[in-house]
Amino acid sequence: MPAASGVKARFEGVSKRYGQGADAVQALAPLTLDIAERAFVCLVGPSGCGKSTLLNILAGFEPPTTGRVLMDGQPVQGPDPRRGVVFQQGALFTWMNVRDNVAFGPLATGRSKTEAERIAARYLDMVGLASFAKRYPYELSGGMQQRVGIARALANDPEILLMDEPFAALDAQTRELLQEEIKRIWHETRKTVLWITHSIEEALFLATDVVVMSARPGTIKATLRPPFALQDDPALVASPEFARTKAEIFGLLREEALVAQRQEAER
Ligand SMILES: Nc1ncnc2c1ncn2[C@@H]1O[C@H](COP(=O)(O)OP(=O)(O)O)[C@@H](O)[C@H]1O
Ligand SMILES: [Mg+2]
Image: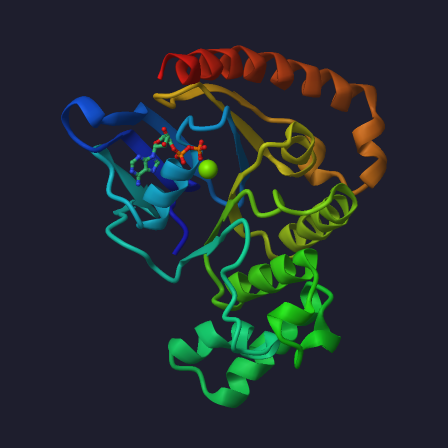
């Protein structure tokens, strides 16, 4: 059920500290962030600022140290199939073919074999891999493996997709094509998405909301709402408006990256 407020997920005063005493790391300062229903939120920030921590808390993999996370107004208390997670790489079952990888979730939640295979076929078609159903992960390129990962997450029909640098390990051309594909899939399914990326261009191309995080302890430094996510033309990245927004985010990020660099040097 969508929340009446239009807020799909909410971080309320969430902070995270790992470890105890002198070895403790304050990964996140108390922060508050709303993710609107159907938004495509891209999280950018310097390395080590707590982006994955934030995502893992919403996924239910890690409890917050303070505060709470709500989805549709209900506290997150652990992993839930309503939240689909895609990692940077490698989460496929190597011993299963592509179709069985995608059918795994639906089968695990009680669908019949026929039904699960029908669902797998639908999402493999959506990511352009219908003809690779009988292949094994090792037979696929990195980009194709990521597309299987995305199909597998979608096959569970999650309400929110959590993606931690899903394209970081791919070459630039593959990444750009997949970005177009993701945009098309998002327009088609209108899932709520939380997406972590190092790439400002990727964030600008995909996001309804770009959330810029500060250096550790991570907090929300700025939120921008660029118009490009709703535009289809891949050439929009060449527009002056795109360049101007890119420069703005670059400036925000650079300040935080310098802070993060000093932190590294002092360790
Ligand atoms: N399980 C953990 N135990 C201890 N420290 C951790 C753990 N996970 C992350 N950290 C630390 O928390 C900080 C934030 O990490 P992370 O959320 O992975 O940042 P990001 O994804 O932005 O690079 C880093 O200093 C990292 O070393
Ligand atoms: Mg990370």
